[in-house]
Image 1 (cartoon, each protein chain N blue to C red):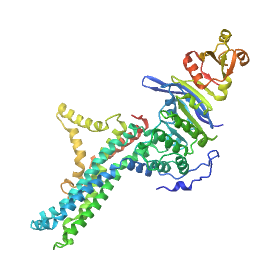
Image 2 (image 1 turned 45 degrees about the horizontal axis):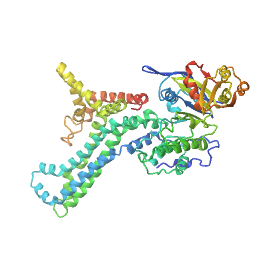
Image 3 (image 1 turned 90 degrees about the vertical axis):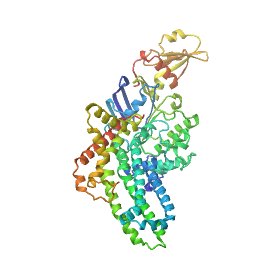
Image 4 (image 1 turned 120 degrees about the vertical axis):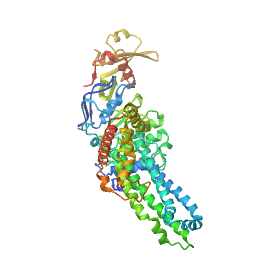
Amino acid sequence: MSTHANALPKSFGPNMVAPQVSSPVHPMYWSIRRELWESRSVYLAPLAAAAVALFGFMISMTHFPAKLHEILSLDPMKQQHALVQPYEIATALIMAAAFFVSIFYSLDALYSERRDRSILFWKSLPVSDLTTVLSKVSVPLLILPLLAYAIVVVTTAIMLLMNTAALVGSNFTFAELWSRLGLVQSGMGLLYHLVTVHILWYAPIYAWFLFISAWARRAPFLWAFLPPLALAAFEKITFHTSYVAGLLQNRVAGGSDSSMGGSNFAANPHAPMTPGTFLSEPGLWIGLLIAAALIAAAVRMRRYRDPV
Amino acid sequence: MASVIEARGLRKNFKSTVALAGIDLHVEAGRILGVIGPNGAGKTTALNAILGLTSYQGELKVLGLDPWSQRDQLMRDVCFIADVAVLPRWVKVSQVIRYVAGVHPRFDRAKAENFLAKTNIQRRSKVRELSKGMVAQLHLALVMAIDAKLLVFDEPTLGLDILYRKQFYDSLLNDYFDRNRTIVVTTNLVEEIQDVITDLMFVNRGQAVLSCSMEDLESRFVEVVMKPEGAAAARALKPIYERQSLGRTILLFDSRAGRADRQQLSAFGELRTPSIADLFVALMGNHASQPQGVCR
């Protein structure tokens, strides 16, 4: 809640000469808040995913003592896998929700304001196109990954509490549970994965979606997906090669491979982190350059494009 | 007085159509300019150029700035309502007030709240729940709380019922306008701005057909409600328009185009100042034969 408006003089009447009031402004902060007001799915979708995971886990905990007995009869590797699996599934669900919201948000961000003509209102205020576009870029590239991470951390903590409560009466201790879950390590791994893959490696993907949403006169979803796929198919049919398909595949899956030494976070969250390999990947830097160019183009498009 | 808008030879082409064919415009501080013209005449294009929403050819300075290249700076001192109901439908009344307070250095939140208190608009409502008239009231409340030097309205009352239209202009004049501000308004509803504006511009096919202050308009144009006899003699003085009303012939004279003076004309019948609507019909109907009319 902003309170600085209270400091403004209230006494001058409409016909008196008003002094030039000038209150402090924070266009970037308020632009981001505006995005969250408009797109409530940004936080509702990951929260809903967390709620579903927690609800399922809570039900499973009612017969946990019986299951624990079964688990403890397995060999140690399988024991750990059985204990950790619900945590991994919850994390994956929350991350998937955030990922899909990012895609749909980015495709809509600069399109919906032209479709409902509200761009004419936003442009009547002293907020530059650059500020507006950057505030929209920050949602998939900063807000959603961090928010999803925070929700994963809180969800994991609640699951751990439920799990501990379910242990009461068994001779399996909290310390044993804690050591087998390895939550700190997977938490660090997830943060690393988010920054390297979802932010740095995927930046050009989100920038492409935002550019399309600023450019398309209709159907931004089709414009975003069909031309790259059509290009790959054309190349395959015409030249029997798959460079485009390879590039697309590398952009979707390659970041995870190079950030974790050829492994994949989804398959093995405990694979070693290899930031050196990741940072020396030319694809990373080329991708970031392309992302910057697409964002600059989106700023320009917002300037030139009329409402649709 | 300082000039707020200064345009010379303002031109704009879309692919094959000419939207602005060289408009000259000079608006001083403290004036209310009404821009009137048929649909597609170039009114909106001209306003968009002034607001830096579209590129243009020719010279244009608004508050001494180039609207296209210095738009971000210009928007601190200029505000506009580009269309009715462009407030986003998802936003809550309380949110949009906080947002404008957060981004606009010249926004007086207390003023906006006071204005809204006089309406039925609830702070918790979303824009999609408000009637069209209420959306217009909300938008006006936001804009009037901004201490802008230039305020631009493009068809601000289109589609509103008569009560809201009347209220809109009353608020604008009574609560907002003072000698430090300048207002430009376009409309098709000529009558509603007759008593509001100080300056008038008729636009047709991208050109200014008439550009005139209201004082000059009164001294330049005169209507004669003819007595039944003497019509032929009066017509010899080259009226620019002739129409019938309630069985009487009414001739409209332009003191710059014809040879008639008021004394001469008063012999033919009652003299009066034409309404903007009648002048509009007269000038738009046969403007091809008219010279560019700029009042001196």
